[in-house]
Amino acid sequence: MIRAQSLLKVVDNSGAKFVKCIKVKKKSGKAHANVGDIVLVAVQSLRPRYGRRVRLKMNKSEVHNGVIVQTCRFFRNKAGVGISFESNSVALITPQQKPLGTRISAILPNRLRGLKWAKLAAMAKKLI
Image (spheres, rainbow, N blue to C red):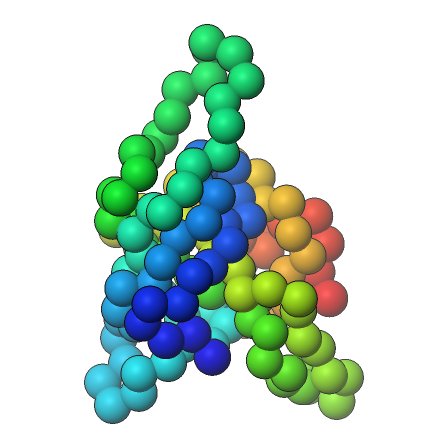
């Protein structure tokens, strides 16, 4: 469960390394987010650039939207298998809900495909 002020790891190649959750979007009464929910995040630290040709897509302290793709909280899929990840992770998206990065370097839950995030699932290394 992700709340405001939670520190999240970025798993795509958009340029950010860690972000801080500002607000959980589209949840009226709930103040926490699970896998597949949209959050408003602020960039805390950036990945190092190796070479001059690499252009950054963002700067520190910018505000972006993100989708929660991994949580430390234990949950069961439809087959009854329990899944939990070692860190809380997010993939950054544009306001039009398209991915900001071109590659995802993490294993994602298969549940994202059914939650209208099939594009993120296609970019992932592996689905479980």
